[in-house]
Image: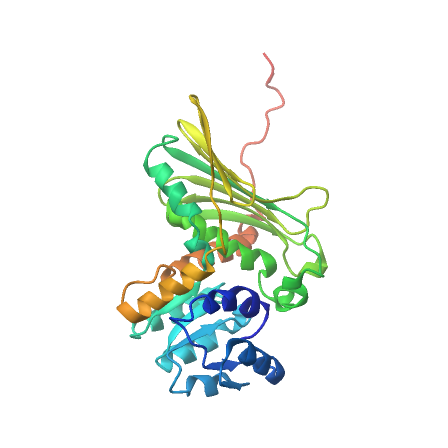
Length: 335
């Protein structure tokens, strides 16, 4: 379901490498010409403009949903009710009410329900978790994330997916759930936080920048700084994990990891390959064929969405915050 740039450039190359496991038999798109194009690309014998036609096709065992995420609720619910296995693109849903119903329905429906969260299949985060569990930097207490770039309207993921500019949360929600998924692998769930979203350029939608400070259930503090409208400075992906005995620095587009302690430093290069898309499909296949649990679950995606929506919606709670006390002008502050 869906034949846009995400399907063509991210999903299809992964499926194409796994022809012994997957066969595309039916394609649906809101545009008949695009459906026909993708059917020719993928070798599908059927295409349509109605997702109901696809769901009524007895040859379809599993469905991949790559429409704009605000359509995920209706398409996913219809797919589950049709008894088809489902892999749905992130963000999981448009709001928590939809996410709750999608999760509840998946738990009582005997099919595989997975979210296309490719960051969960990166080798990076399990390796970082292993470093932490091994005590390489002592007890972690803070994680700092910064992602600053300037995205133009000619960027193909905007010009060919203009829905990102009008959707709730915009680019920040769309990309932010990736970060939440990666962090959850290392530190578990976020229990509390406060976010400060901001619109720097109206052309990029309702929000293009975010400062989010949060605390995980295990007590680790986090700060997430993200902007798609930074002029004069670019640092698209940087993360620092600070522990009691050292720090872990991740940079160079998530490819280089440096562990620094009082005894010195060591560096490791971790290739991203196809950024987890093929592994995502292999995991989905194994879950369908063997009954094993899928790694990218509806439940995990529910928590990732919850964290990001909290970040985007929490600022109003603090607008009237008054700091108690103030300064006593009669006290000499400098001894």
